[in-house]
Amino acid sequence: MQRITLVLVGLAFLAVSVGAQAPAGPVVPPPGTPIQQAPQSQAKLVVRVALVNTPVTVRDTKGQMVTNLDAKDFQITDNGAPQRISHFDLGGDPISLVVLFETSSRIDPILPELRKTGILLTQTVLGPSGEAAIVGFNDGVDKLLEFTTNADEVEKTVARLQTGTSGAKLYDAMAVGVEMLSGRPEATPERPGRRRLLLVVSEANDAGSETKLGAVLRQAQLSNVTIYSVGLSTTRAELQAKPKDPVPQATPPGTFGLPPQPGVAQTPDSEAARYGSGNLLALAAWAVQHIKDQVKDQALEVAATATGGAHLSTFKDRSIEKAIDEIGGELHAQYSISYTPTGGNDTGYHEIKVQVDRDGLRVRSRPGYYIAPPEG
Image 1 (cartoon, rainbow, N blue to C red):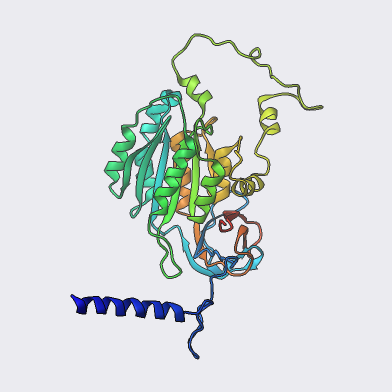
Image 2: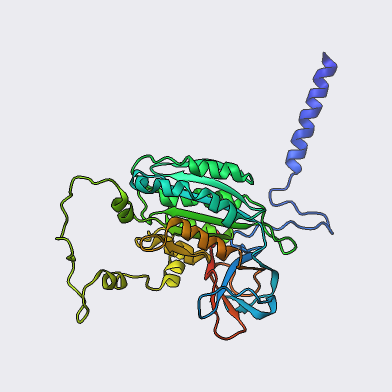
């Protein structure tokens, strides 16, 4: 017992001795020892995009697709800096497609027409190596079919579409579609990956979404998702619906609620031109830079313009089937061009310009993409 006590006393003395000899200030490392620097709290974080893919549609003055161009015929700039094309293809890269169908009660009269579009999606849009997923939305968003290459499953799912409530969470559904596509095989400079396409078959109205359109488009641009849209018409649906009790109108039939423009005859066409498309490119760029603000008009047109796709209306002489057929024809006669961005600022809006070294051709591509500054 006495021996144990002596050992404990010795250890206590040693601890006190070591504590007394410890320096009060910082410990000075031995000569030659590398000194670890404190992290810089204000260090600049650099954000880079690995690869930018832009679909490019080229038409002649008659509106016909031009399919005899080579990579050397295209010039691409990113914020004014010339870019080197790392991948070039004409309509051949396999497609990953998410189709968003509005299933609100408002489109019930045209539901039979929607149910017939499955075979067009598989035969005209997807092609032999494509895959598709189906999403329906009204007051909620429902994944009706996960990605599959089985054409029969796609066609059966579309043929079984059912309408639900009157709501239409369009932007929430678009966000789901972009997220689904972001998980598909991504392109690299050595491997093209898959073309990521979102096809929206819907009215342009959104009701109740938590997501803003600008946020959806920003993510779509960064994920190289191209958005196409087939605009359904509530007016057309009402005309095709069974007769209902008359509803009082704000103005008498054939009249307009606002005075005409000076010197212009007031007609449905003149009113459409008065509140027409405007500068969709500028509106698309504004949307992705101001994601907290809401785009009130022309949502589907803006989405298509922002990502290099196209919007096709079905109100007049174009049926839903014809619109989807036109989209399929464009996709398989479209150039897919990729590059790794060099030069310019890393954050902020990047403007993409694609030019063709031939006269008399019209070129359509995505206008750009936005990289948000790092938070904090």
